[in-house]
Length: 163
Image (tube, rainbow, N blue to C red):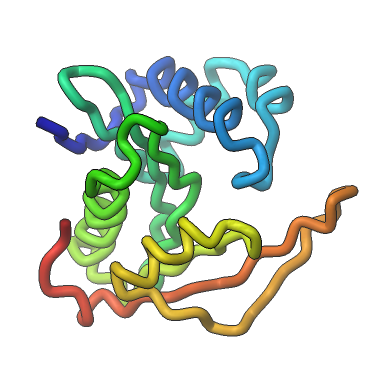
């Protein structure tokens, strides 16, 4: 049975472990790199947990997914969504997204936004099924591969149930 839990600052090593696994598994899906984040120190990982709500999905105790939500009074920002290959297609992504949306709703935010890589059609489909809508706002990151991603948005009031 998969369950999703919010990480505490004391669980920084688990955040590090799962985030590095995500970067190794799907390097083209993220704006960062395994090499860059492997070099972060404990204080930096703790800082991540102090600035954002991080959720991990576990199946039989094993971490199989991760997502973060950066809080803002009006609009939370969903970041770093990842589901392990063995958890894909099983509803884990919807449960992780739901955790961020629920946290945003509890914080009385109006919406949750995110950015999705232009080449990640699978992620875009997951977000669209959850109700996110493309805004037409694009950004190109200053990288050699001209990494482009589009902003998507979901009004929190539009969500009645989560996977």
